[in-house]
Image (cartoon, rainbow, N blue to C red; front, top):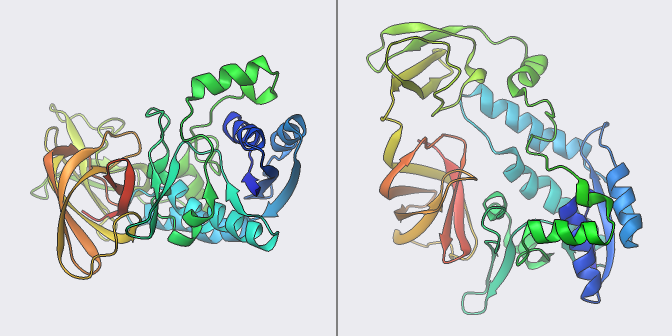
Length: 342
């Protein structure tokens, strides 16, 4: 079979190319151009090392509209977005899907640590968790559509990154020494507030308040903070506090005493269903959910209505943050996901 592989030139996509070739598949790489400054040199070098062709795919306009603008809008509205979740759905996977279809490929592939599954009984596709729990990236793929997953191949589902790096070093691949990037790709210095202010201008200072509305101090602008934050607040109140609410309309940020950042329930909207069929009527289910990428799944009872879900945790969850993703699992498959509202 013939696959188009999204290729950054890092260890993961390079090893994914090798895995596909070893399984007897024909592989061509695709490096996605997200900005005028996208560096393609690593992808070009890795493609040459593993002996595959490499094409360049221009995603700049779509990336700006769907990812960067959305990221800025969400922060300005007091929410904390997941840009990689949005990128995977509307830019990265969609463009690979389209390029593969137009080029006569059997499907497309990536170097994510995750897998895919098809349930013959329900006729539904889903993304599954990777064997390497520390590297599992299924959380970032909850927005993928049935059509996108149906053509997606992920070769690293059963691999451990430590083993891949060791093997890459043994065969002399340059990506064996590549460092992992934990930053947002369009904000490499990590200063997301500075990035937003360069686009939208300086954000005004405002008040820190307590739950009763009493003014506790001044903040630097709402984009510098996120719900659940405890450090870097610049306040000395005598007791530990955390950000419990960000109100862009009043420009107030509510601080609450530490310990109150735990909750037993939340509301989730913008639902996308994978292994779980879209419920026709009110449905209640017992599932496991992750409320952050690095969080461990916790059990929860979920009640659906037509456009949202009410979630009740079996044990209190910390820093449930509006704008972040909540991803629900049945066994190791994504059941559905959504965006946290409150």
